[in-house]
Length: 385
Ligand code: MG
Image (tube, rainbow, N blue to C red; front, side, top):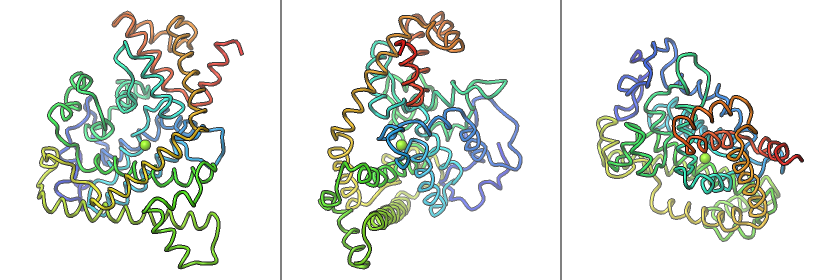
């Protein structure tokens, strides 16, 4: 589907453009750009991508200008993904495209928002942000005259759909098949998944400290942090404050990224794939951490869950967010006329096709697309506030 030159320098088991399963709607070749580059560019130009700047990662957007938002999180994920892809001779633009798109389906207010919307949608097939990310790029973006969505390559869509229930996988056709066959996605998708974990584990340490939810003394319980913090304070006894934190986190990222490269190289050598199909058919992911680093990474993740994500401040924010989304959902379900006209039209046609479940899906799409502040504004509007 493109000139083979875009595959130059890649490992034979990488996602090669010459072996791509292509787009749902065939399009002429992209010319001087590769197809995966073109996907990345389409994602960057999408509405959903720009909205990430006002969506919560952990902290609600208006709490402070320095906290990560979904946008800066996605950029950090892409940066880590690109670095590793290049070293492992995987497709850098595909990895970048998946990383930039991985959170496009997130609701406002982070995971609390997703759980709230999922509860609202319980009798209508539920709501799952991964599936919604795919729905955004497949259906919801309105940028092309001849098709809905962004018409991305199969490999990009495969990477965006990180998790999926069996029931949903059955409805998705080819892109859902691996969840039924217990197959793996390509290495670029596997890499994007772990780049996500590396990014949030490290930036949530930084954000948690900045927010005052955790203290350095508490973080010293965590082996990965303690080891690097001790090395930094021993090498630079005069350096204090934020600079010690940043130097420590920088070294943590470097260590886990290096480990990821080494362990993945080892697993590829062991599995000896010859093409991406061998990667997909392999019983386990080939991209991964060594057992030691994996255990440390889990320890840090557990620490963050207990001390940051379940901190009373974050939980308090969550309660308000849940209420806001529930009330928006109930109001729009009761009276779709409260939504902007374009969304009313969509709700009407989806209801005509699929009954009440169609209306609920249209409402969920509208709410999931909102930024944090837009959700608050809409809530104030419908409550007459
Ligand atoms: Mg993420």
